[in-house]
Image (cartoon, rainbow, N blue to C red):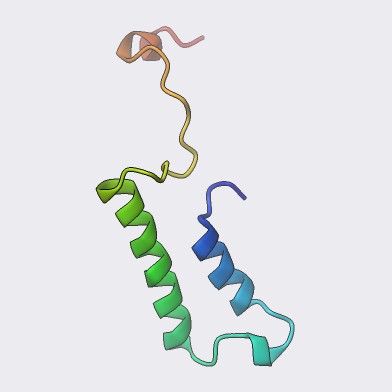
Length: 70
């Protein structure tokens, strides 16, 4: 799914692992992984400006193109 960042996807996949040994051992560990993924996204998005927002589309012609949608 392109709207989910790789670190977020990794945390979700690990939480849903078939084997309990491969899952997070606690709720706190899972939340820490999700918060770390969010922090990485925000740093990339607002500090480094390297991560595009989820579902971002290429800019077209500014406000004029917004009013001329068909």
